[in-house]
Each structure stands twice: as C-alpha cells, then as structure tokens.
Image (cartoon, rainbow, N blue to C red; front, top):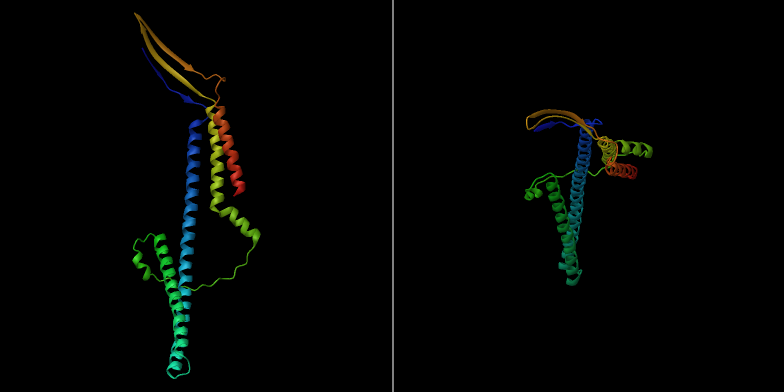
Length: 235
C-alpha cells in the first residue's frame, strides 16, 4: 500500500514565521547601525586627537626654540666671562628636556596618525608622516536644552533602536509560539491491497486539545519579552 499526506499548519504560522524573520533582520540592522556609529565616532575622535597632537607638537617646538635662544645668550655671556662654565652646562642640560618633549610629541602625533590610517582601512602606516591633519580646535557655541536632548536621544539613539527591535521580535515570537500550540491538520489519501481486496483510504488527522500545547515554548517567549521590556527601560 501507499499513502500521501500534506500537513496544513493552523494559526497563520507561515506569515508569523516570516514576521519573526523580518524582526530578526531588523535587530541585526539596528546593531549594524550602532557599530557604524561607534566606528564613525572613533574616527572623528582619533582625527581630533591627531589635530591636538599636532598643536601640542608646535607648542613644544616653540618652547624649544625659545630656550635655544636662551642657550645662545648664555653662551655669549660665558665667552665674555660673565658666567661660569658650570652655569652654561646647566642650561645646555636643561635644553635636553625640551628635546625630549619634542620627540615625545612627535611620537604621539605619529601614533595618532597611524590609528587614523587603521580606522580608514589604510594598511600603509608609513604614510603617517605624510598625512595632513591640520585644523583649528574651535568649539562653536551651543545651547544645551536638556528636554530637547532627551527627546532627540529617545528618537535617534541606536541603542534604543536595538532595544525596540528586540522587543518587537520578542512579541512576534510569542505569537508564533502560541500558533504552534494549535497544531496542524493533516489530510491524507492512500491505496491499500490485501489479497484480492483493493481499498482507497482518505481522511484528516486532527490534533486534540490535550497533552503538549507548547506551554514551554510560550513560557520561554514570554520570559524573553519581559527581558526585552526591561532592557528597553534600562537603555
């Protein structure tokens, strides 16, 4: 004999699975947006760190040049006999501190530029000496309105978008788990031969509302919804 059966899902399960899949994609897209936002923030921060390092290097070089004038002045005074050689040596020794400060500032600037190249995906770190990050460190005047900032953050912050997407996913998952409790109808047709008797079979398998009604799946989904709600409030 042979029989063919075709299950028919109840509770609009197919559309609910598609809804869960779409919600899952939305969560992933929200997380990607947050990653890109942080990457862009790191890029901006590193750029201005490079600008600041360049400004500090200029200050250290200016300090060294000014002190170099003092060294020359004391050299002339020593040659004319106004100061002792020990005093001149002290001044020259003090100049090494300015040389060290300039070297340290140059290293800080180079490290910031290398980090900048790394963030934009340039593997040629030797270009760090050629990258120009000249800019002015000016802060535009900004009026901070706390209520407006809070409203803007609630609308635009990626962390909130992620939490909202996760809550929507949890809600869709609950609906899917509840639809699974309704089971499925299974129509079937078949043919059976016993000896000289030929029989055609047809019928429908109907789930009975007893036993396993997917209680564990529903409970798990409801718990996940509570977690998502709490995470949204926390964010």
